[in-house]
Length: 256
Image (tube, rainbow, N blue to C red; front, side, top):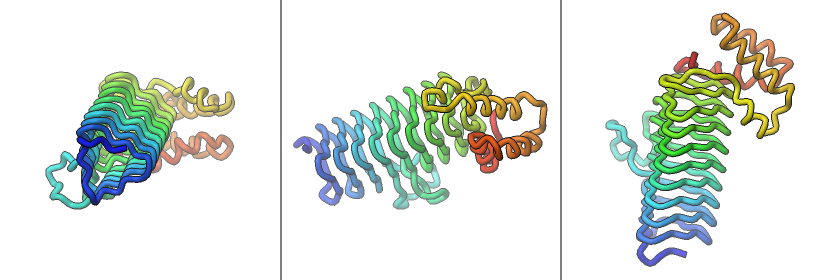
C-alpha cells in the first residue's frame, strides 16, 4: 500500500490499509490511522497524528514548524481526526508552547485547495473551507462553520457554529453562531437560515434565532443589555443558549 518511491521513516506508525502515494515523505513522529489515503508528493512531518479514513491530496504539507518567530523546535503537535478530505496544497502547522501546544482539526471536515490552518488553531467537526481560506494562529472554529473562498481570519478570533462567510471575507472579530458574515472587515448579514434548515432546525428554532439576532443587532441595546435579554430568552428557547455561551467566551469582541 506504500509506493516504492515514498520515503517513510521506520519509526512512523502506519496502521492497516493506509495508502501512501509516490514521492510522499512521512516523518518519524507521525501516526496515521486505518484506511487513510495519502496522495503523491505529500509531506507529513512533526509530531502529527492523523485519524482514520482521511483522504489527503497531493502537495499538502502537514505538521511543519509554525510560522512563528518564537518557535524554537519544541515538540508541539498537530492532531487531525477521522474522515477528513484535505485537498491540494493545504498547509497545517504545529502548535506552539505559547498556547496549548497543539493544532487540532476534528472529524468529517471538507477542506479545499490552498487552505492554511496556522499554529494552535482548533477546528471542530463538519466544517467546510473553500479554496484559499486562511486561518491565522490561535483561531477557534466551531462545528458546521463554512468559509467562502479567500476568507481570511485574524489571529485569536472565534468562529461560532453554523456560521457562513461570503467570498473574500476578512474576519477581524469574533463571529457569533448561526450568522452569515461578509465584507472587509466582516459585517453580520442575518441568520444562516438555509444552512440551518438543511441541518434539521425546526421552524420554531429558526424563529427564535431570528429574534435573538434582532436582540443582538437591531434592538439598539448595549451589548451587556442584549446579553441579559438573550440569557432570559434562552431559558425557554434552548438554541439561543449557544449565543449566550459564545458571548461569554468571546475575547476579541463580536462583529457589529
